[in-house]
Image (cartoon, rainbow, N blue to C red; front, top):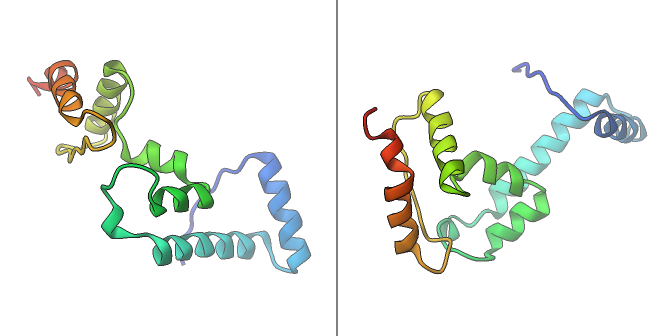
Length: 128
């Protein structure tokens, strides 16, 4: 068993403690069950064939249903203004990422996004 320090908002921890008590289990057991349930549902329902399909696919709805949309956006996207994108690329570089796989399929004009990323984001990193 691996140990993991977990920071929870106070209100969420209190709610989880209440539910765990109602279920007759420890908070630790309840959190293990809740995480296993969410991960299991994600593994069962995720449609790999839709991975790069833009729009409101079943994966989009699954992320929303599981409450992980913001996590996925924070974890797997480089998005926003050119300044936002440069900051995100720099943060990835600072933790050791040296290769990026980019997909520009999420909008009406992917070619425009590629040109803007190349013109307004990448030059900040060309000498690294």
